[in-house]
Length: 89
Image (cartoon, rainbow, N blue to C red):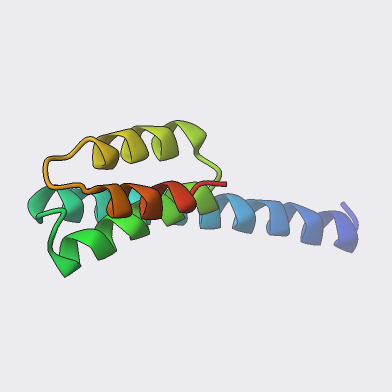
């Protein structure tokens, strides 16, 4: 294997690792969201973080699931729903 092939393989592996780590962050943020109120500052930070990181790792199913969940929570007002929708690609 050439040096270039080796480097390309390592870059690909690192990208996969990064995507996996980003997905983990989204899941952990969603767990925090589940333990906090959608009207609290911490809860809103967690919800925004979960959606942003799901988008960043390209997991469309997770992005859709989290967005639907957060949009339908009790205490979500119209301004908050618009803010969440604005995070979507």
